Image (cartoon, rainbow, N blue to C red; front, side, top):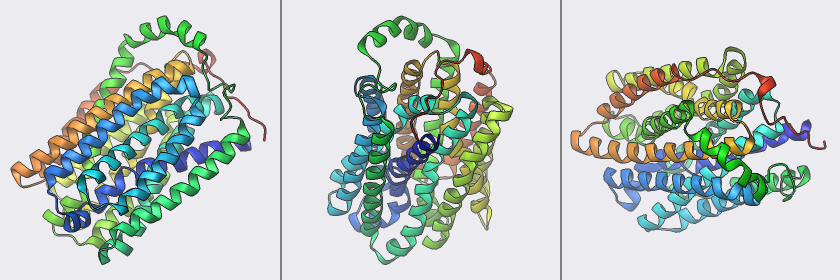
Amino acid sequence: MRLNAAIVVLLTSLVAATYGFGIYLFAQLVPDMQASLGFDFSYVGSITASAQLGFLLCALLAVWLTPIIGGGRMIVASGAVCALALLLIPLSNNILTIGALLTLLAGTAATVFVPMVDVITRVTAYRYRGLAMGLVSSGTSYGVAINSLLVPLYAAQGEWRSVWWWVGLLTVAMTLLVLVVFNKGGLLSPKVPLAVTPMAVELAVPRRRSALIKPWVLLIWSMNFLIGFATFPFQTYLSSYLRTELGFDVQFSAQVWAVIGLVGMFAGLAVGWISDRIGLRAAMLLVYGCVVAASLIFATHPSGHWPLIAAGLFSTAFYPIFGLIPAYVSKLASSGAMAVSIFGVANVMQGSGGMLGNYGAGLLANHSGSFAGVYATISGVGVLLIVLTLKLPKEVPAATSAGAAVNYPT
């Protein structure tokens, strides 16, 4: 059991690297990298949209590769690629090269997260899956918190490249530790339960096709699209909104991000724990309500200490969202392989929504000269997510769930 817990913690650390560093560090460094490299908000929209394209393509890749090479191998390889890309960014002065590396980083986020739903299903008991996925999804907040410590130290002095160096080296260390523990737990062996044989895949095809037409699956995919559409641009343009339009300095902007990171460290775990008791749908309603409230604050009253309050509300919602959805899928899917397939497509939809949301938000901000309209739109999407959540069926009882936890040697 101790090794199972260690696996969940290490998965959390790789989410911190691939999401916290790989996706959200750029959002915090946009003003500093703009000043150094010279690009406008249209390019920010294009580059983040490209990153989401990388995310959705790699989500499809993960669905195909995970049954072949195993989730453990997929996760370790993704961590290694993430570390390499992070270390290459500060070596480049070409914005196209940096854009390509950011796209690759977003892809590693997908290839780390998609196999996790099967890993969590196999190493975590049914009743604790909400808690486990809540912790894993909160990994992004730990990455964001580290970003918030490093950005004021270096970016304020024009040394934004040093931030990338530090997070790259941290990711190297995390990946090596994951490699050691996964090897000890047998997760890198082709014969572990994570690996799905070709015969199993073939037998699962008819069941998979029938699952894909179920209303709850279509609802999940629609919700993931809207989650990406709303939450990704919320963070992508946050520093730009605070510093270039609202006139806050880099220290206050870092405080806002620090609140997002700090609250997120506990939000994923807390909401995951709550969801195991009140149900995943009720927890989803709670977090989507927080998205609506946070975006309305930024759209209508982004002054004084209100941005900090909005950051706390957003963080309470954002990190648990990405744990609640896979936990819900793991409880309704008939098998671990089915859960990976459904969640893989859900990540494609999330990436598509994020791509469209980031690009559209950049165009809207350029056209209107303000980010207020962007956050007003996000609040509307949050309301729509609440409506869709009310249409989801209740999760199945534990007794009918497939995929008991596997207790690896301690």
